[in-house]
Image (tube, protein in one colour):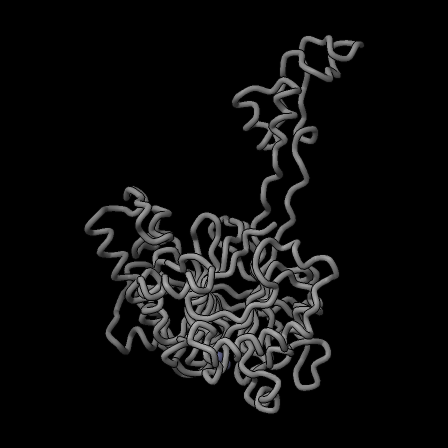
Length: 448
Ligand SMILES: [Zn+2]
Ligand SMILES: [Zn+2]
């Protein structure tokens, strides 16, 4: 699973407006699976709108291609914190996911055998739905978030008469205590958590942080080899940022060299998988003969024909936070600053609720300015900084001159702090290093 892109469904802070929905975005992988980060009110409608002509017109204007995304592509859900603008859309989204799954299964059989169709949504085109319907042995839809997320969902679903879903879900709750992983245990954050499990809920996993690291290590699940860590952020309630490390990628085979050495057909695949092969003669013989080039057989080892494995990339996806840089006078430096894989991360997604002129509002409300986001981006030496969670006073760039000016101002203030390493400006593929995004905008992450 390698990063493909981020798709932003909601980029506004606090409450929805006609031009920005509240927080939600997707990290999309090359196998079309996506991780959903936050799910503010109206997120599922943003999913449905993502394929519309109106949205296409906007994304064409932004030059970022189609933003079309599908609910069915969601493999995991991560909630940064329980403020309404990040979580009020989640119960409804689960119900729609359940309805879609049940009707598709009833009408068309298992989605994994459904013919793919290039005109359908990206997630549907993948041809599989990751969760089996309600069964004791099935995989769960994993939902990670701060302690309280399980009780929140249980209460919303049960109180609204949604007695069961088409699949089982399981919450992993991040606790702000130095405690080992405790399976099947839910220390009650409040009275609601004492309610019995929802019909479709697997017992909650309670997770404390790794002592010394101040990071929470989440199980990647499903054998995907993606690694996920969380770090606490300073906000008005318990809030987290997530680091997603993609799975190791296979090194590239130098096919021309392998062929020149005598490898044929299926042997190329074996070399790709790291297996040595025996070939007849060929250039550079090293066994079976004293004289180079005259032997009958030769062994080609993977080391001879495989390049270096590509580096494992990291995406840093932060929730609401006061200035988390080490220079912060108002907040606590983010634990990712002390965690080596966060350095040179492919992308840092950071809130930018305010600009310099409103800086005095930021810390008391638990938020940051674009400049403060730029400082953290510089300290982490990330490859790209994406600004989101903008105060609704800042219109998006496609809304007109005022929006364009506001967006450029936020980007400029962040850029003044986040100066990329000299000469590195063009090493990241196409696209700007600092981008203040709007709804339906996507950010390419397919660069090396
Ligand atoms: Zn928020
Ligand atoms: Zn918040």
